[in-house]
Image 1 (spheres, helix red, strand yellow):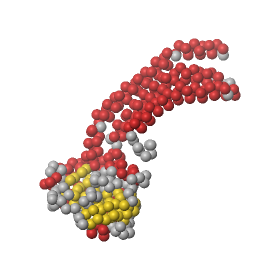
Image 2 (tube, rainbow, N blue to C red):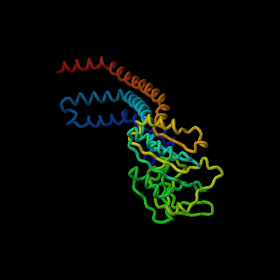
Image 3 (cartoon, one colour):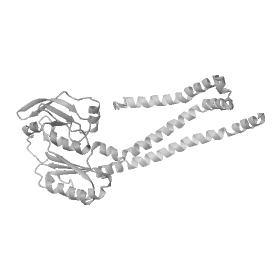
Image 4 (cartoon, helix red, strand yellow):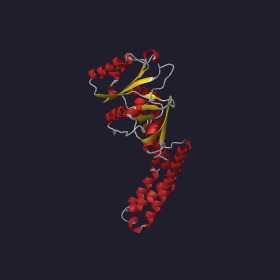
Length: 343
């Protein structure tokens, strides 16, 4: 269930219920049973002060099982809530869905493409950022597939240090995931079709799937990306539409070291090539830093609330423990006075 990430709500709720029940029986039954077993071992039970220690432990576990159970559950809820909210602002989650610090998508008849790419490179160089860039020119088929040539795919794979791929003939393709859920399925070898049908104008082909790679190299695509041989790519025409304003012509991906420090560069580039009017601008610019900050801001209030609730829960747990220890104080004083008299 967990390994396959089959996160269905009834299963999750069932897991929580069983964990709570199991925790209760851990303190009320299992611990008591273990102490009884220890008491039956005379060599251990009557060894030095073990007689007092084990006997006192048995009494404490029986009398305080419910309190220990409540403390553990309350602490677990507080830790889980705070930890989850802290993880939401982690830059690794943002990188998981989009590995590029900057993504520039050229649409339709974009006359500023070369100028914009030059500007991005200039700003990164001026700010002393080390970067790598790759570009792809995808084709879209009539049956909603995204096709790229294997040489362009290898340029992206090289940037990330992934294995370079080779397609031996025009009848083979490689599937590349574009979202995290697809990547996880392909990594487990699930939902990988044996063949892919490509329909474009008067061309209809059924191509054999050579493999499905378990990593994202081109995010934000609709569905899986199909990698074909360079020769087949050149044979397939691009899909014709009445309006090419929204048709992707090319996409550039910039991988930048320490991108989380690129605030100044991001602000300059967004001011230069914002996304106010896609039809007139014929391009789309994305900055990973902006996505990361936006995610942190959205979860900021949730984090504050979770921390405050966590503090309340911890205070409640500490209060339970304190009052329980205080209630047993008089009994313990009498007990130790008796032990002192016995010697």
